[in-house]
Amino acid sequence: MEYPDKKWNILAIDDSKLNRAIIKNTLLPLNMKVDEASDGAKGLKALDNNNYDLILVDIIMPNLDGFEFLSRFKKRIGNSFIPTILMTGLDDLNSKIEGLQIGADDYLLKPLNEKELVARVQSLLRLKTAHDELYEKNKNYRKELFAAKKIQEYIIPSDFSRIPYPRISGRYLPIEDIGGDFFDCYSLPDSRYGFIIADVTGHGIPAALVMTMSKLMFSEHSPYYSSTRELLTLINSKIMPLLLDDQYITAFYLIYDHSRKILTFTNAGHTHALYYRASSSRVLALDTEGLFIGITDSPLYEEKSLRVETGDRLFLYTDGISELKGTGDSEFGENRLAKFIMAHPDLHGEEFCARLIEETDSFSHAIDRNDDIAFLNIEF
Image (cartoon, rainbow, N blue to C red; front, top):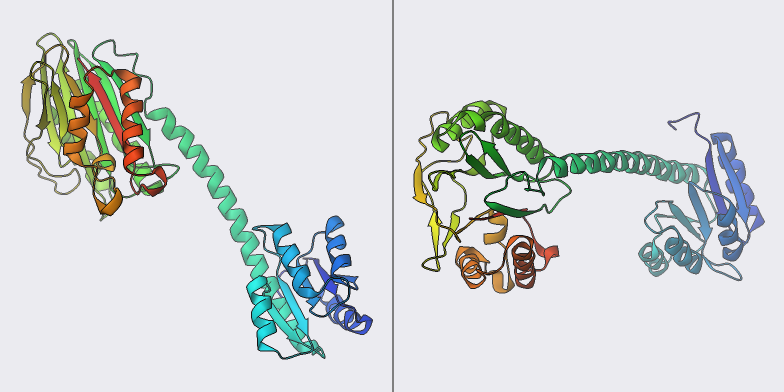
């Protein structure tokens, strides 16, 4: 067997001293230390002071039989994997089924055959080794994922106080530890401010890496472009060589000129931006022509603008909200979102964000979400 330097700890539980001796004498030359217990109760006691790699347990024993031992043992170890082999003198299908349902990993018929004993024990020890290695790799992966989550939390803003006007708030709720949605706000030259919201296809690490690259590119280049259309064209040319074949980005970029009270915007295949006009209590769906970022190296983006009035609200969001599933497979939808905005003109900042999350949670439980949720609430 592989791992010649590994010392395996085995527990043999059987009321037959002869069977315990056979197990011990057979496995000892294979670098396996075998502890013995004469019934299930003593087997459980042995577990209090020792860690075992594999357990062999007889079914029929006094005090505590093999089934009851196995049941208590599985509850004790929880999700840990310590393989168990049930030993029985009866080739009884019902007993085998019962043992496997409780949690046994294999069976041995008595009288024990030494070659079969060695083969089954080594097979399960190989399985345990693979399981333990995978567990360690997964544990390290979770640590790295946690670190990545902390980095992502740092680069996606939650405090917008650096921009004095307009008033900005938002939420980012990934379904996994890390996700592909992002938003950001930029102070630009000449009393202008930029707002971006974007969604990278997919979830997890690939989407998060593309998200990070995209966000850095927007941050780097936004101060040098007064045209939303030209900036998205540039980002497309720079990010496209870095995307996988099935990856693309939807994005909505806007520039607010505070001195002129003008909002200019370009949409690259993203969900509509919703603009609440306070003077008429209406919501406008902002949109322009334009493909996703990363689809073609010659995109044709459109640019539009509108006048901003005091009391207006701009709402940017990803499709994790609009495509949120409720009962009967219905979607939360853009219309429902627009109605919420119109119904709550007096909610501002964090209070608005919290109330919207309550609304989405009542529509669909958070555990049922299958996409990231991100939104920016911008109040003029």
